[in-house]
Image 1 (tube, one colour):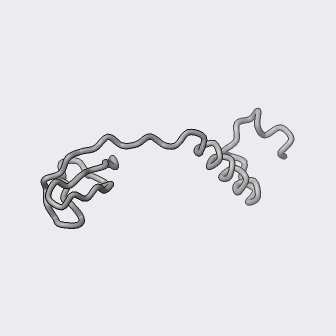
Image 2 (tube, one colour):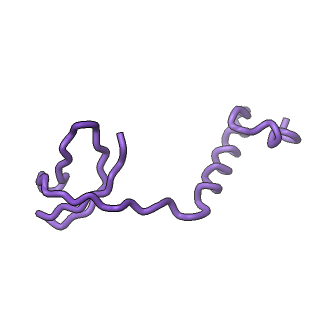
Length: 77
C-alpha cells in the first residue's frame, strides 16, 4: 500500500494518497480521477537520526533495549 503524491487537474489541488492495488485514485476535494502522479520529496536529511535517537531514549526509559545493536548496549545495562 504505497503512499503517492498526486495533482488534480480538475481542481488544481496537490495531495498524498494511500493507494491499494488495483484501486483507481480519486481527488479527495472534488472526486475527479484526472490526476497526475507527482514525484515525492525525499525525507529531509538528518531528521531520521533524531527520530531514531528519540525512539531509543523512550524505549530505554520504558526498559526496552531490543531496538539496540549489541555494540550499543554496552554501558546501558
